Length: 452
Image (cartoon, rainbow, N blue to C red; front, side, top):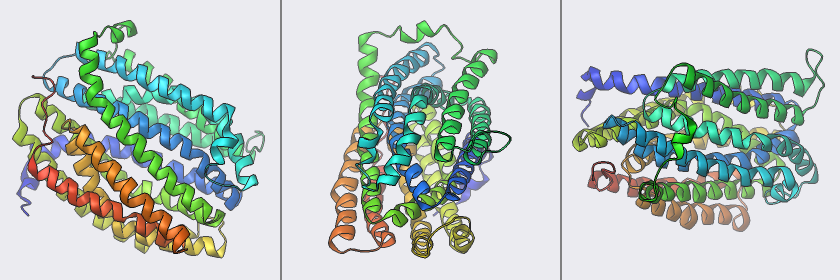
């Protein structure tokens, strides 16, 4: 394994310029999400479970939006490599239309029938009641989130990342401060508990969109055009982008449904189990901060290289990012293992809940390097290279033929504790690693979508 690329200053500089702002943005997001869970965690395991399960709806939505916007960002990154601006604006218009339509459906579900939605995960009446009050409020922010996600994906693909960092971090800080005041009744605000967290979240995501639009137009970015021009694409162009992006959307849909099925299985093991899963998820999100930056930076650099006709460079970039990512993942995993007791002490959990968290963190930290390898090849290579159909097939098979059956068998046949069920789910990551490694080395994932 050659590490001579570490002396390539131009590569390191370009990677860090893209990765650091994204990682910093993700760090603030993950940190404040953890603070949210800690704050709500002072209200007990039921409140943690209610907010965690309610956020499963947002989780599914955000992954579908990620699929749509990242699928289309394949084109914007390659068009940026060719220095063509008008097609980028048209792709943004398509992304806005699709994302808003999806978010509208989720808004209706969250605001009109939250009890039915939460009933998929749990039969605990108190959890459903608390979660429904949260969903009814947060649901109104889904459309602003969809619009912001479309802009953020395009801004990243054309390497204007700092704008997204400023808008997102400002919104997250505002959301956390307002949520804190409304959860506990600070500074004369009413103490609303879980509903206070929902108001803070909805207000923060709406503010993010407002700030993004202000920055885009005041900074005169390539997206600072008459919005009507975004929708001037013709049918051949629409179909060209749509046929590549749709497998990415389907990919995230099936994957998110698989993850939410896991959480439904965990929830049926007990409120203490799903509360522990939610605590583990916040630490996992924090631990994955560096890798989100590396993976997305890799995707942008690969897309730019393919658009410029430099396919060998695109392959080499992914190889280098895989090596860096796996090394970082091993280090981060070790840190998480060493800090398990500190994490457990942050939450008001039952003895069984504390035990679950300890073991979940151990399993998560020990397998983090495999997930980083998969993230690098999946986001940085397959999707960035336009190999969305193969990625879709691999994702569906791994999660639905391996992961979900393993979780079901572990929970309902073997009656294992939640951390061992979680370990069985990791079998799908292991299988995916073998397949994605073979596909990466084959170079069949490299598709030039803008020069044909």
